[in-house]
Amino acid sequence: MNSHADAAQQSQTEDLARRIGQRRVQLGMSENALAVQSGMAPRYLQELLSQGPGFDPGGFMRIAAVLGMSYQEMLEGRSDPPGVPGAGATHPVLMHLSEAESWDMLRTHEVGHIALPGDPAPVVLPVNYVVEAHAVLYRTEPQGPAAPASGAEVSFQADRIDDRLSEGWSVLLTGTAERIDDPGTEQRLDEQYPVQPWAGGDRRQWIRVEAAEITGRRISGM
Image (cartoon, rainbow, N blue to C red; front, top):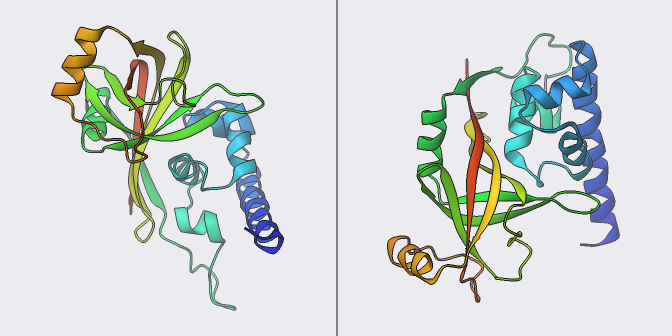
């Protein structure tokens, strides 16, 4: 990407952060309150605002719903024709999913994002996954960036977004990662779940993320 494209993308990210900040202030909401109501840590919200929507579309979708904006309105601003007041975008309705509904949603998808501790900021990577009981499992490179040490605290998110209708759902779980190193368990998982990571390569290491907490949200237009 050339310097002009980089500058344009940075400008769009700054405009988006400014729109979010203005709407938050208009609602009398603190940044911490916005983070909590959007299902994320304040530090993670700050990282989203600095990186832009490509970093975590599902996270921005939840922010839009909390702020009472459509996803498209938040990304691009109001598109009212000049001189026509009150022609706003359709506002979405935010519905909280039960734990069972959240797991059901995860089972309908095959690709999610694993968020791992990083320095200076968290690292978010796409992975192909399966659900087993109250855990998410995926395969990766044994020494790759998506292979945390056993015991690491991580987050996992999957979502589906319809930009045209400003609708979709997002499920976020937090828990503890476990590297599966037992040969018997590895064989069972290989046979039971023929997961083929899109990135290819030597991704034989199974990672299990046991959920400590799971939250889900569905957004639909009024």
